[in-house]
Image 1: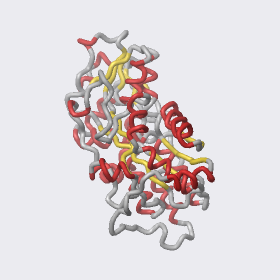
Image 2 (image 1 turned 60 degrees about the horizontal axis):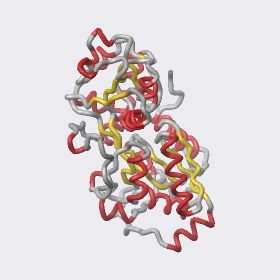
Image 3 (image 1 turned 30 degrees about the vertical axis):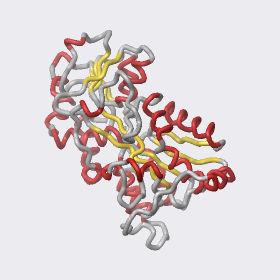
Length: 353
């Protein structure tokens, strides 16, 4: 599996546009004032009638967010769901062709938002709840994006194929010969979640781990949402990475899966939302961005999506291990961005995919 276009290609294409200083690095003096959802904003958004959201969130979750938004405001959400790297590539290709089709984008690779901010194509906009409740590390200081959702990339196992006492408790446990041919994992060239997770793993554990894992006859899939699904079907006994939220959703539906939070720490992935200032539906985009950070929308991503919220006023799902009780690997979007091409190239060589 090879990407025809990588992150650098996209940025080169984007900078070829005759847009003057639009794509120059820009740092704002400060974030704009926070904005609330007002009757005037709702009315203006209704006149546009829809919002286009490019997202790497699981399709069923994006559809639930869209349905709730439509039920509340009568405005359609056209959710275009694919892997985070594909979202990034698509927007780069569209902007290189002077096509402005996206209103709001969500990526599981926060580095994408850093790139779009540098290009000057994000609209500084601060939803009321972000200003009131979100920690500085989960919101851009200049107001161009904020962490809409978070997830983890744990180990997990099929409870019908693996006994709890035999399940791996660390990433290094997966290198045991008994797991050869029984592991599934996703690809950092497709998934922003896995790119971020791989960066954190390499930083904290080292490439030696992946060199050894590559010899374990791993089933390679694309999206971070795929390993949990393969696990539930019994196609593999253990997953080396993937989305925690899909494990939750599958388990809630009665599937035989269980998450494990490794002793080394679990990769932590924040997925920001940002508005594109040249999007076709600017008022609907503002309304949607504002709604996404309300307790109502955040509760949906927890209860229906199995995700983690960064909103401190939102309750965690009963029965799930609280985020505060899990040893997390530290997220570093800037570091992941700088290392992304090296990670993808080295991973592809190691796993031959």
